[in-house]
Length: 630
Ligand SMILES: Nc1ncnc2c1ncn2[C@@H]1O[C@H](COP(=O)(O)OP(=O)(O)OP(=O)(O)O)[C@@H](O)[C@H]1O
Image 1 (cartoon, protein in one colour):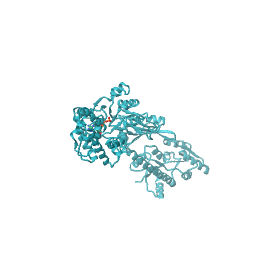
Image 2 (spheres, helix red, strand yellow):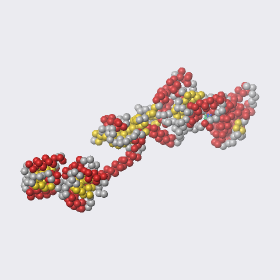
Image 3 (tube, helix red, strand yellow):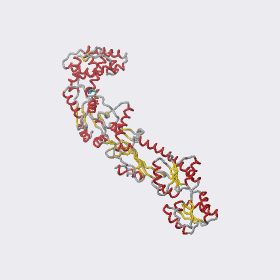
Image 4 (cartoon, helix red, strand yellow):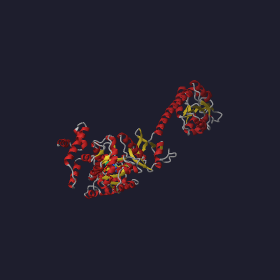
């Protein structure tokens, strides 16, 4: 199918067009048309793949002004065509009239001067001037009328002869060249449009463009998906009828871009960039690109997880939790119940009772278990950094701020749980911001004006007495009540000492692979010692003592002496108490055991005193004194 068609409004054009095609080596469609059927024929050709039409005269002009989507190239009237036609007309008389467009008439003036002729001219500027043009010229008593076929066909005065002004082969060749270059441009444009379309179809960002009146000109598939609105035929509609908060008209009016704005559309939160489309300092539209905030936050979490090589995931499951005592089981029951709701939990208890373990457990039993678990020890992060760590910051928020800004831990916990350990250590300013997070479900990065909505569950923990802190004005009362919706007090180890054998067994099993020693357990007297101790460091301290005892023990069963040694000075104090209680202890013998075990440890670490002191939990000087004392 040829991409170019020549539509001839007069018969004379057909042989000229055929000649032009044969000279240029083309085989275009050549069809005879008339004023009435021109547009329907052109439309049929357009549908069957014709991309450029060549025609001429009034019919050509009619096609250009019609609803055709393809360009129409006019076959020009050249000076040569005029000369040829005027020479022909002179055969019929000297009084010549001509009706045509201003550019053709300019050529006529040049020929008049050269030939010493005076020609009656009628300037056509609209296609419906045929009748009046012919009437006017005939009334001037002309001998002959020159014009396009529609004009000459209207002459019915037998005294006036007619000559059709038509184009020659050169003019048709000129039109063919022009049509071919239009075809080239259209092909390049089509390629570029296809490329752009592929980009728009492929990118995950939503893209919507509007013209200067706010009428949608582009809306890509991601925009449809993200906003999940039925976008039937959105092209051509007003942006404000489709989106409630688009602000595109504002961007067109101000000519200023708006970047990284959070926008709510039908309950979908999106982060949007809007820019004006400028040409020669004039705004002729705007384009916005946007992403779903929730997706962005998820991706950011994924990337951060990978970058940090550690996932914000829970480490403890219910089966790793040891404790059968009533008080502990009561606390575990609360964990199970509270994990099913989304309210804030406050865990209280002495250091090392397992507050973090409980927080992990609540998360892993909750419906958020697939989301992140972010644990923050508020006492471990320097006070001046805590705010920026929790809330994040934007580029240039403060001196020393990392380029590109930083996502805060609250944002990282989005769709999951944040565990704020040692919450009693929060500075007052941070307490106020935390209250806002709990009340509004939003965070604001340092140096930013935008609020970022987040969906998190907060679990807080402290080993301090909040009521006293609130009374002393060190902790905001409103924050305390907000945190203390569900409370879980965790009992200290000394109040559930019956769990001790189970815990020891659990830790031996857990530690054995690391220590690479087979240990059966604690001798009954050793267990007695452990049960008598008051465990200020609770389970963490117990785990350390079990580990130390396992390393020190020369036997598969850990003896009382090994435990005494592992307990260090805290346990020696215990021995004194026992003595005071009337128990007989042989101090000299104990010191001897102590010395023996210290030597055993030294032996295991090849005499490295620093290493041995570390394992024994005593200073190097004490170690030296203990070896040399006896
Ligand atoms: N019920 C339990 N069963 C087994 N191990 C436990 C249990 N509870 C706590 N642990 C262990 O005890 C140690 C201390 O627990 P955790 O860090 O949760 O205490 P914490 O109360 O948060 O301490 P801190 O107040 O110092 O932050 C951890 O090694 C943990 O594995």
